[in-house]
Length: 420
Image 1 (cartoon, helix red, strand yellow):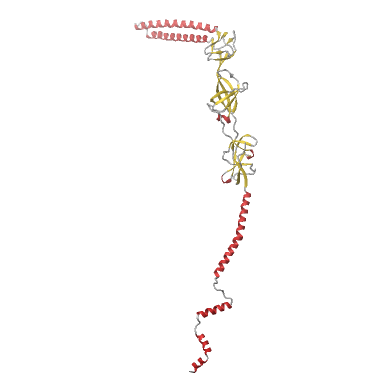
Image 2: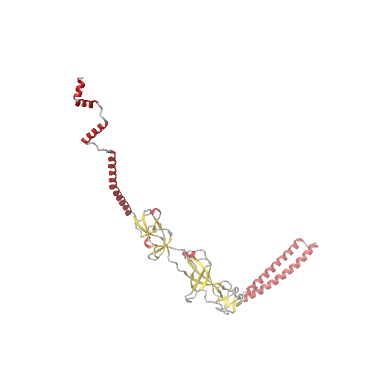
C-alpha cells in the first residue's frame, strides 16, 4: 500500500522509470535521430552519393574531350600537311596529235609507158632511112632498109646446098626402092638392103637441114628491113645512109617510145610508205606549167624498201593523149589521199635525257612514276614529235626534276593539253 501510495504521490520518478522500461516509439526515434544528425553535421534529406560520383566523372570526361580533341585534330592536320609537303607535286599533260600533216609531195621522174631501142639483126650498110626524130610511127611501119650483100650470098649458097640435098635424097629413095625389090627376089643380102634404107634416111635429114638453113637466112635477109615494134614516137635516130651496122646489141639505130600514157616513178620515204596504196590518186605538177595539174593514179608499188635509200619505189600512170607531158621530165607529185599515221606530240620540256636515251616520266596507277624510253621525231621548238613509246592515254610529267626516279610517288596536277 505504501509503495502504491508512494508511486501515486511522486508521479515524476515513476514516469521516468516507465520510459526506461518501455521501448521507444518509431516516431520518437526518427525525430531524435534527425535531431542528432542535424546537431552533428548529418546528411540532408534526399542526399545520394552515386549522383555526385557520376557527375564528377562526366565533368572530367567533358574537360578531357575539350582539351584533347582540338590538340589531336591540330596534330593530324600538321601531320597531313607535312606529308603533303614532302610529296612531290608535278604537272601532267596528255600527248596530243601533231600538226595536221600537209599533203605528201615528192619529186618524180616521168617515163614512157613503153620504150625500146632498135638494133640491127643483120650485118650490112644503111640503104635509106624513112623516119626521123619526133616522127609518130605505127606498129610494123618501115623505119630503114639495109644492104646486106653477105646475107644475099649466104642465101644463094644455102639454096644451092638445098638443091644438092634434095637430089641426093631423090637418088637415095630410088636406090632404096630397087634394093628392096631385089631383097624380095633374094638376089641381094638383107645387110645390103638395110644399108640403102639407112642411106635414104640420112639424105632426108640432110635435105631437111638444108631447108632450115635457107629459111634462117631468108629471115636474116628480112631483117634488112627495120620496122617499128609498136606504135609510138621516134625519140632518137643514130643511123645515116651508107653507115655500116652490125648485128647484135651494139649501137642502137632508133629509139621509140609510147607516150600516150606515161609512167611516173616516185620514191616514198620509209616513214610514209604505209600511207601510199595502189588505187589512190595523185596530182602531177611541173614548174614550167605553173597552175596546171595532171591527174595520175598509183598502179603499183615495189612493196619493199630499198636498203640503200630507205625508200619505196612507187609507180603512177597519167594520161598524156594531148602530149603535154614529156617523157624524162622532172615533176612534183602530190599524194592527196595518202594519210600518214597520226604522230603524238609532247612539250619539249617533258623530255629527260639519260644514258639510255630520251625518256619521259608517266604517272601511272597509284600515282607512281614510270620512266618510258621514247623515240622522238621532228622538233618544233616548244613541242616535239614522239614516234613510239607513248600512247594518247598516258599522263606525261611536264618539266620533271632531274632526280626523278622510276616508282616515285607524286601528286599529279593536270594541265590543259599543250598548244601546238
